Length: 286
Length: 158
Image 1 (cartoon, each protein chain N blue to C red):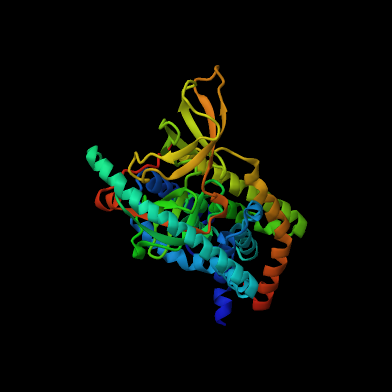
Image 2: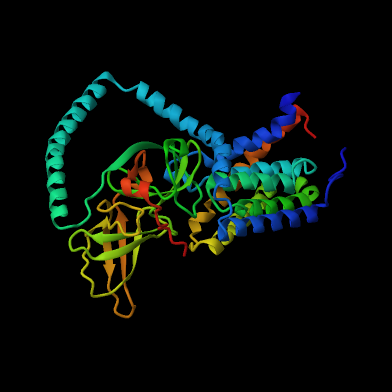
């Protein structure tokens, strides 16, 4: 039988060494953000594992799409053609309205809204770390993804890019406790800050006076302040307002518009402004 | 010959993949701590090959995969594996069911240490849902123990 630990430091020393190393790594990573660019390489290094973990799901999807009946395909096709028709109809109005809006804005001397470039990304993995809400998508640095980039789904804002690796990247969802996003109420332009609660279907709105004009069911749009998210995309709807006068502020809860628990395809946005100037970090680490 | 040299590493890689595999939200809550379980088995069976060092590096990989601050998982992993390695002679003599209780305690320690470190870094609240992996790890342990012992005996690892 081999002698145990015949070489190297003794076991308690190893533990002490490992724990000290871990703690210094935590401090180095968290306090000084020391792994800024190294993290890209580290993420790229482990991405084969992520692809491997994603494989069973992909195989399942592939086999499911193989067994779709002819009739269902025809039905889907008919429905999609119908939808595309309707949307194209609306799009004709949209180009006209956008031009009109730009003209009016230039008359008022306010900045003309810029065009955005969009790319569709697919969900690769959902993080199973219960303490934070992150997802991994299949677009990375080679597709031009950058840190702080806004991510949407077909309903509303999902989150922003947190870490980029070469072929995939990690998205911090708006429901994460460390995330906050500036919004305004669609009905009356009251400005608020929506922060994550740690639960996927609930967001918190803090520090709102009792007298502010808010109602249940109000739609909150991104306000564009903070220079991370573009203006005017739906974020959440208010679900409950508790005005307890014994507390300094009202307790307001909202529900994200995007279905954060059933994401599949996502949109990455490049606005001209974000391409030009450095964006200010919007994640507030509390 | 080659599979004998890499079988431990291979089992850890499989555990890592299982740990990050996308699952439906309902099942996700009950996902056992695969990496901790596999490392625990090797730490009890072959403490001369798998101990604190391996736990540290596996923990770091887990940190990168899960997007936590570097060092959080490695800290908790080292602590648990150390406790197991120090007591490996006693724990080996326990029945599988007694071991499964010990593993449950280790999984609870692991999850609580990770929660505590994350709590220091970010502002998270404790939910009892976070402790479901402890129960599922205890249930999985006897089966995993049986499987890995079979692998170890087949390949005559020591």
